[in-house]
Amino acid sequence: MCWHREDNAPPSFTWTLAVTNVNGATVRHHVPAGAIGLVVLFDGGGGGSVWFRLMENRLQVEALVDAGYAVAALDSAGPSGDYDMTADPVTNQDLVNVDALISLLGFAGSDVYYLGFSSGGAFASLATLFTPARALALFNVRGVASTFSSTVVLPPPTLWVVGRNDQRIPPTDAGLVANWAAVAASGVDWELYVNEPAGLLPEAFERISDPTSSVSPADSADAVADLRAGAQLDACSVPVGPASAISWAVVSPGPSFTADFQAEAQRQVDELYGSHVLTSDFRQQVVAFFLAHT
Image (cartoon, rainbow, N blue to C red; front, side, top):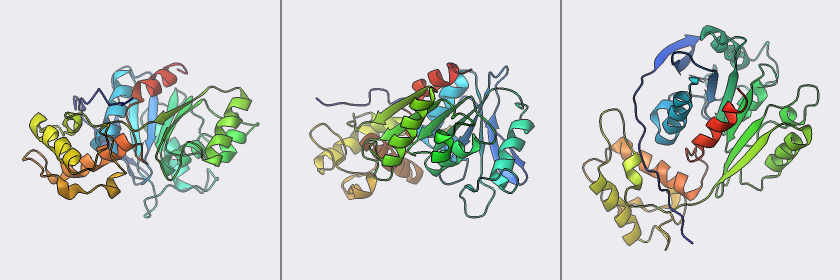
């Protein structure tokens, strides 16, 4: 049976960001009136702009805001772009900055949640040891074993999303399996979702947009047809591999496909293939999980 992503709606871009910093690290945030809690976002590259710029990230963040949460993305402190994984809340500037961000936005002592992708998820799980979160959502990462095996400080309720074809952290990854087994043994709530490969409908690329423009229905349909005609999709219109293995030379992009939109199209292919990329397909499950722990 073939499976297709039915919801291809783009982000709404109905609100804008505020930008500040803590100890020199950039913080991008949006705090709606009467926010019921703060979700701190950590990306694998250590930068925060992706949460508000890339389609899957923005859709996840918008779902959180729609549910009443404030959101904030913290850049890493170091020049490498990666978060420091040193388990010391005094010398680790990234851990210091998590506390500073929470206080700066007025959520000290309030409900705080962490959401992290890839190595950003590893850092998020580390941070819970020192600045506890009400719940944790991890995408495409196993997390830090010491967090989930801790019996002194119980691990937070944790939701995982992994990609079926993620070559870095597949669903069968031994560390991932051990961590969710440890959470289950602790009695803490946990959920696991697998991003299964899905076929591209003609409107698949209509999701790609920015605040002023988007990929047109005609250009989206033409690009999907080009991929199919060029044997880059299987019988169910699922990509035959990750974006890096797809021959994009078969696509003649229409006028609405800007260079940035073409790059986003490759991320969409990775998402639909179930690769190592954030997916928004489980955004309502993330919201429901956080609400259950508010």
